[in-house]
Image (cartoon, rainbow over all chains, first blue to last red; front, side):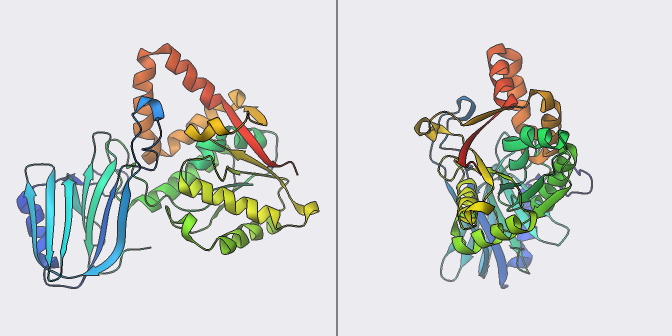
Length: 127
Length: 217
């Protein structure tokens, strides 16, 4: 679905995304990795039970991994194996290659809200 | 001058007040700290991505400002979810520059302690710092929006602004922030359809903008 020229994501298809990950293997690439449950999660908004507001992100980590796998039956999990560690994301549902050629993977909840994102680029993400 | 961190804060927190001022012919400047880059609302169904969101929210902000009658919009270029981490003196200095240029008689912002989102509180704190750094005779009045479970610690508001005369305009501006409000409004509408008391409560909440004073000016 496209809206007024804005690219929109499609649901993840395992083989397609697996293929899309390959160009990033064994390269110095830029990573945006994020998870969030929203800044208002600790508030009792409109009857929702308050919980902790939890968020973590790293924007523009320069990383190198030698193996990239996407797994699962939906939502999906991605594991990127580095020489000295791992990059992991769980809960992925949608993806696209954006107009700048960057691979964007995201997990959206039932309300369409972003819950997790794993993005790869050959050039730094805009800060 | 309305000084808030995210596109949609100006409408959701102060939209009625802004529309009333514009209706009365008072010039209004909106200063928006960030482009809401790290928001998790992408529309319902999602039409934005983490990467497309900032440009989209800027577009939505401009549309909302136009609907509210605001012609002077400033973007500070800070980053969403980082306002509390930048040098507070630098940030207050940037705000002070806007105050010295425009010389507003009134500033609307968030309460530094009671507005839930860390960016809200950091912007409110920076505004207070900037205003307090001005010579006393040059300080504008500062009216602050507060909300959240912490409100129990604040006394009653100093001012309740009745926005009923401009509610339609406020809601049109809120709808213009489509990526942020589409899902939320759909949920609220669904609930309101089943629960007249909820509809009533929502109407009241949107129609009244409560302010606590930092300075009377």
